Image (cartoon, rainbow, N blue to C red; front, side, top):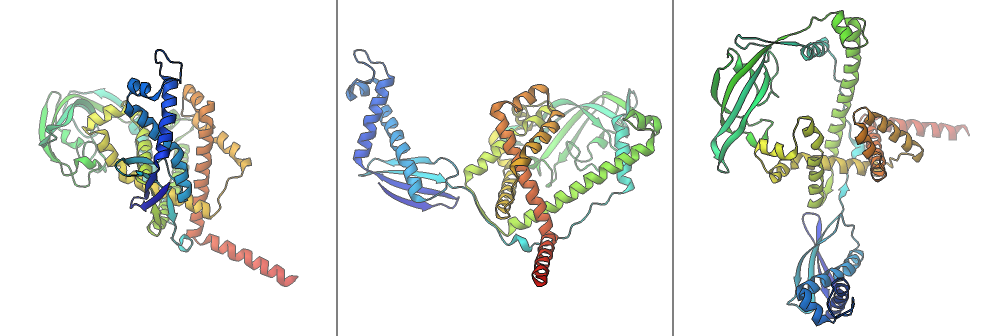
Length: 461
């Protein structure tokens, strides 16, 4: 068996393997016997029918295809071992050159990811706290009042603060794939935001709700809109469209007074002061977590920029598949499944994969870099701590999952996966904590202090 290989740009290796005729003949013989065992042929006991009878029964190509599988199953591990590579996944047979003697098998093998880190230990970045203001607390209190507003139908024109229930549809001004429909007609509730409210994330576009001001029940409105080039909907950026709406119902929203009775209705609070104090405590914790997350992202992005990261396309495709699969619970919470979601956006599954690919690729690079840092820093979780971590995770999941989902999660087949994910999450957490310390110079300071203690001890001795 003669093997030649060629490294490809996408972190795969293409192999060309010459296979001797006697190897193929042996494979055909084994294939014939296997098929003879499976196929019932009148007049012959299982496995005893001659080759020409088997060939007549199932066809020469069926025997040949199984023979190729047999040869590959035997050949593939030896090729991998001889090449000394670490595959990411199974290889793919691309072509068999039957016109050559000996025959040549061509296949490509995806390689395991490789990460060559830059000198991450010299990274120094200032940590910036996210300050908490009185306005932040007021915003939470106002949101709580908004969530507990009392709705009353009204017959007047729509105004700020109302909820308008509308029929809404939209069409593209320029057909796409022969279709003009952009948004099929549906009924939507729309909160009419105040003028000073930030509406950059408003659906279907910023400032939409204020277009309803002054409209009465039964009134219709048609207007053009061109989506901005930085729209969060990537496939709609720059899209010229025409929207049509009809007001079906208007409800006035009466906000509750911010008094002790309101505070008591929200939980175990005696008065507004206690509610404010609890909000301040929670916001302080949240802001600290957000600041740490942003800081960690800056560090990891810096490491990525200074590192060489290689992975095969199969790995990215695998991560994209899981990313879309993980969209399921969020879509379900919005009353959608993936198929309905795709139809509502008028995109195919392939287009969705292409759309999410950049963010999945960024996430993949971050994951590979963090795990390589954990390896170099020898970040490990003692076995004695794993059980406690899993128990804590189970307690948290019990608060958000149904009893049926918990039973499935803790089933024997899934339990090991839970343990593995918990362990990985803890390794990542500890690795990011180490990177925070490095970027703030704390690891260097600790090492210097330890060395000074050692030197002092030696001197005293």
